[in-house]
Amino acid sequence: MNFSGGELLFSKFIKNNNLGKIVQKMDKERVPQHIAIIMDGNGRWAQKRHLPRIAGHKTALTTVKEVTKAASNFGVKVLTLYTFSTENWKRPKKEVEFLMSLPITFFDTFVPELIENNIQVTAMGELSELPTETLAAVNRAITQTSHCTGMILNFAINYGGRDEIVTAVRNLAAKVEKKELTADSIDESMISDALMTSNLKKFANPDLLIRTSGEQRISNFLLWQLAYSEFIFSDVLWPDYTPEDLCENIIEYQKRDRRFGGLKKG
Picture 1 (cartoon, one colour):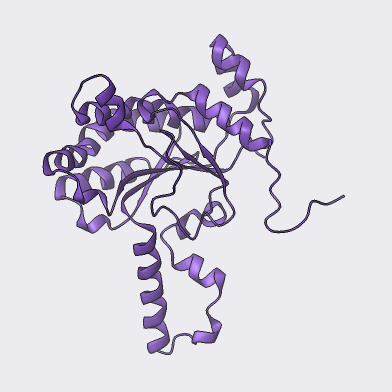
Picture 2 (picture 1 turned 180 degrees about the vertical axis):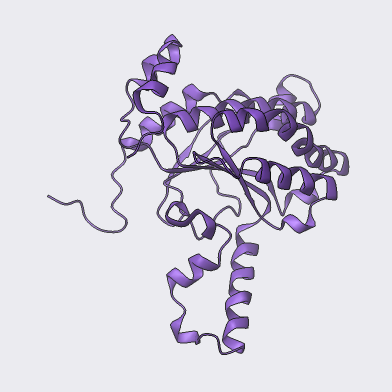
């Protein structure tokens, strides 16, 4: 792997004794190229502290910043964060309004750091259904970081896996109706190209899915793309999740034997 910054970036972590010791156990040549994270546990984090749920969401932004920069420095090529699902609209109105306001303040403060770290922002989901100011903030971050050539920070906002597949099928069906292709010609590659992750090209399918908070389900996230991903379910609540936790999860991933349905050679 062409490691982002190589030994120089890794040496940053050695100054942090705790993280430095963990990083030294990581195989720098086998870092997962695409990590997807279901950031769960914000509400429970707040509840444990007798705080309103929005306090957990607000604290979670610091975790997003720290984990994003750590993933970039570890050599991850794509980090996809499940930010807001199509089902999350069912939550209390005040909580939804707060969640929709977060990208506005978040990107205003984080984009300079993203540019400094050469990180590019992308987003997927039914973005046109977002509030006007939220969508403007997301598009602004995408534009401002479009020149960056390092890790892609991909936000899944107003995203649902089933919705994504339905949209892809409808688009392919429309092409069949227009005789632009035949039903028999539709294969896995064509479906992949019709999904929202197609812009990620060879990194479209996550190598590793992490879900925090101890819950063990994928909640309608990347249903097609996760077919052969490795899953790690962390008991840590997202606001408490650290670069050390990410490093430990990557090390656990590196112990797995990924055979993609085949047998181990030798």
